[in-house]
Image 1 (cartoon, rainbow, N blue to C red):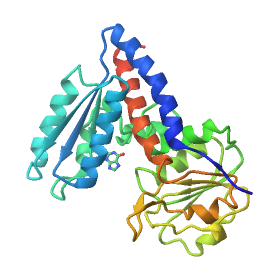
Image 2: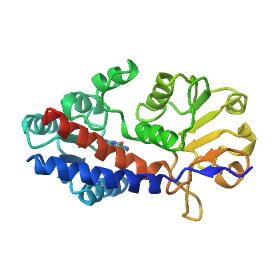
Image 3: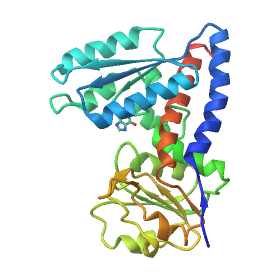
Length: 284
Ligand code: GUN
């Protein structure tokens, strides 16, 4: 069996085309969807993610700005800025790029963003609403994964979904979203004993470990759906996922590649959340 590839780049292009139309419609009503991204310090990876977000916003005609701040900014100053953005009606979505410098408590910042502008879906209210199955902002990577599964009509109900990784951004929320769709969910992580015993039982395997190519064909049940959240560079500088794509694609039914897999979907879902925020203010 050679797996069918779930191409996140192609799906993103399709979703962005319809979001462009939605943006135009909102603009005609006098609402210009606007995303404000706050970047603290000069972490090159963060800078690259932020410029990707800006470019994608422009592509669909959405307005965006990046507020760049020095690493020396205090938590109090950053909280004051967030308050200003919360109070500004023209700002629909606020995203503070993580990680933040160690003297700033990320949770304080996340909780300061007004839930109606929480396009990252990181606020405890958004997370609580997501877990209880209510309409809310879903954090972008898990939201993108769910869209990828939907795009291939992959059934989730009754399936055994195994999630490797328990981050607040990806692992924990994707498990909850799959549970909301009636999957039986197992979480594995760095302290799991005998990982293979779990992964070989997975109908749907979500890999978000940050360890390059750690999952190979021996970890996979034949016909599984394999979603690779990893973006790593190997020794030759080539982008690779957490899954050994070449071996796993011979055994899985569906697989996401790296690059052109989950990565492009994350930014696309951020745009979708920003449109949702803008429409909320429009009273739609
Ligand atoms: N850093 C890495 N991924 C993300 C993300 O999705 N949102 C924010 N705010 N920071 C990040």
